[in-house]
Length: 319
Image (cartoon, rainbow, N blue to C red):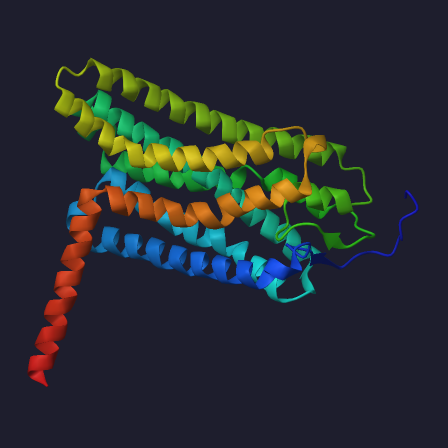
């Protein structure tokens, strides 16, 4: 087809950022540090939420889910990214590529739905505080959390099945650092119109619907804040939502740019740069924003440190 070599391809080669060989070592160090910090920060938040009884509320259960999600979301892509910075030949099997595609987009869809659920939680807390305990009980929160995971892992299932049935006969080089949709389609010698249309539709529906629901919640929050008579009350109420809104802006800004557009408009160089933001940067930004701006999390963290110091001091006395 189109004069391509018809030998079946069994593995792909990631090109990563091979176009800038002089910067690859620098990029490796930056990506590795960001990845490790992201793992530590998200793990710390999960530990704090699980161990501090005062944080067993819907808001922090959602936050713990988000941190758990971010650990796997970034782990799905960053190890291969790091490998491409050190080696000229980083391969992945066709099956491994399809698997990576599925888990990456499943966790991305889960994050979209989870952010919408978190926005609804803040909407109820600000706009209907008297009914918060009823509308966002622990049981309802757990249903939202489970629903986010189920919905996220269901959304890309059909596109993944169709991709797994595509034939690849060369070339085998993926102009990316992970198995994103457009680079995969470019390598197929099958007709990809149906799977491209379905994948584009699924990603657009999930991203835009969750984005609109999130913005709707924040729109109602802003209206409620403006109506507050006290300036101090407005400032305090707004501060409780700015962390989540910052996360939403960063995340949705990059993924809408990357995936809510016609496939023909894809630019591989820009796509790789934008992907770094939602694959590497955002998973670190999320816990930092929530930790630095949240008094309850900082208080719980100080409590954990105090307990650790007490245990260490007692152990020294015993010895």
